[in-house]
Image 1 (spheres, rainbow, N blue to C red):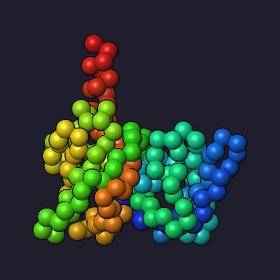
Image 2: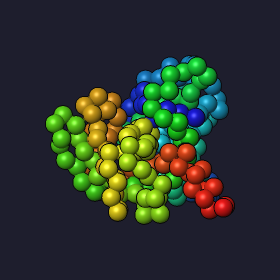
Image 3: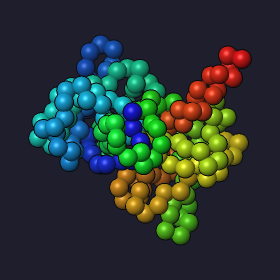
Image 4: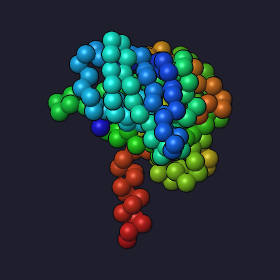
Length: 198
């Protein structure tokens, strides 16, 4: 479990195909203390929760299943891709964003970018089936970043990226057409499931 507060911007060193099912192994460079990373540790990598399978000085490796590749942007990652990183929560950690599972619900596209004072306003178009699960002033996670939803329209939501987030995450460089991993608020997911069951 995570908070959507990015603590490092890493970089993909290598992205290699593995196995007949089209899986991949990524090696990601980071400023994390990788000597303290246990094998099996969970790290949110621009949204998806991935498991550390190997690590060394300034890097860690993860294996990505075909299922994860189908439902996220990871299939397009290559050497040099910048990645928002967050280690998993420990009991007692500050919950600065919102509860994030690291389970991506779909890939959204940036429809429009506009400057609003020092902030960037991103209009983001998620898969339409997810729109009923997104509420104004609720939370979403885009590429691993916890954000407040400012507006919700028929086909898009709007978020503002403050200067700190522009510099500390990849969202400052997101332009029109950019693909972002989207996780809806876990509370909305369970409310929707309860409504289906009633």
